[in-house]
Image (tube, one colour):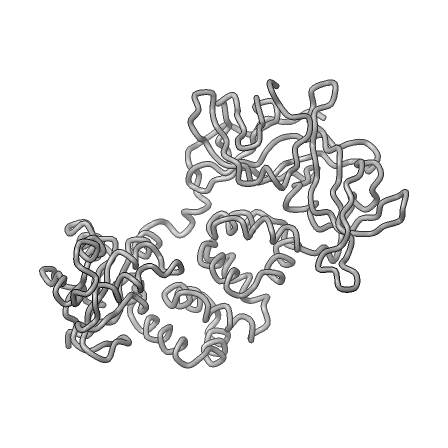
Length: 423
């Protein structure tokens, strides 16, 4: 190791980029893997769980890590691309140690682990050396007192904890993009996943669910009480909610639709009425829709919404009243690039592009793909036989349906078996 700090805190490593010797980024840090055998002897850090391109998680032995500084991790560049699979003798620091209830031996103080520090021993091995513990809040304090103590001075780090919380793990997940958080949740042990799901707020859980594999979505939703499951579905985009509900048992699906808000349930039912793998089934009924009397300033204000997906912010759909799908007659689209070149007070009707035929709800995936590719679009309108706008198909919707069902779990490329790690 060279120019490496003597102590590094695990929670601060999460999300740091990993570079090869040439300075090219090869992934991001997602967790640390340790051999946890004793509360007296400092556990050895076996390696890093790294997320490489394609959201694939691999194991990087600490012998491959050449340098760690405040903003990045460097490796030898020789990485085994086989998917990481946790062994029974291994523990994940972020996934399994954070939020454990522990007791400081000398003082008897009880609290939860909110971070763990590692450092290099004399033999150059990395070991877990310090534990950061937070006491429960008392009185009017919003946060309890914190302590950083030696590993050997803490009890409760070994063994299974039946009711382990998720507060500090949630804090780490909330710093990630939904897709990255979903990938971490997918890899968690069953008990930890359940604790995380229970602790996430509805909006964040909805965002994460949209990024999880179908089987994970179904499993998580089926373990929620019906009221909360319905709330989560309302927070999801209608097309993702429709896909998820379609995978549920019919009785469960009917019950959840009844519990959802009528407007939200109506959108989902409408999407489910179209044949699978068609434009109607994969579209979103919530694009930016404006009337022809709206100004360019109005349109730009709508697309500035930070919660709007990038693909839907690329264009505005202009229709006659009513403006809720199915709308009045569809007039055309206004591309964001064109809007940026026009005076803000100009009517959006003056920037319309009506040169392309819109899609029909029965259009196949192949037809949708050809349409987007032909016109270099990231979104396209879907209209009914009466020329009313029903929604928009975006390129991310298309990819979700074109890729294999298990694309998130597929290998990025073949690799050799993961080498063993001596203790």
